[in-house]
Image 1 (cartoon, rainbow, N blue to C red):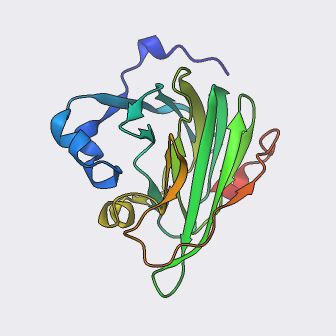
Image 2: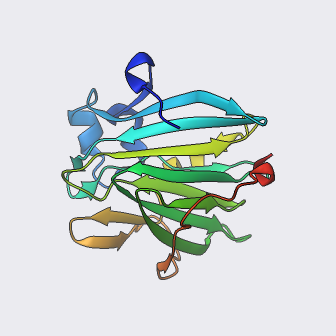
Length: 195
């Protein structure tokens, strides 16, 4: 589905909105008005689901590649993402009952490939390119509520993706080794599991 984003007004995530989750917190203080990414929410509705588009320009945040803020889905909601342009790293993490990270994995997805965010997992999207923008779409229930607080409290996800590869976030006590999963070649035709 082709949507003309020039006719829509996005929500903009600025550096000042991201200070709590960046590897280098000073970036948000020194350049608070820098625009990091654009969220076009509810550009389509279908079968009780909401279709959003997010555009993340190529940008470096110091040593770290630009990313989304990160959130957990409250209750048991799931979400799908499909890369429309560029490529993405999707970093997923799940908290255990002890409050430590029980599982963490990343998926690299290119144009046309998709992922499903499993229930119980928080997620961050990273644009791993210094030259190409990332444009992606997601399907989600409009009833899905999100929680940014776990990411804000620990200054981001349990890993950062930097020019020097993946590095562990030292604010987490125990972080499992990062594993990698394959993307889906296409979305399932039936998305009723998102409701």
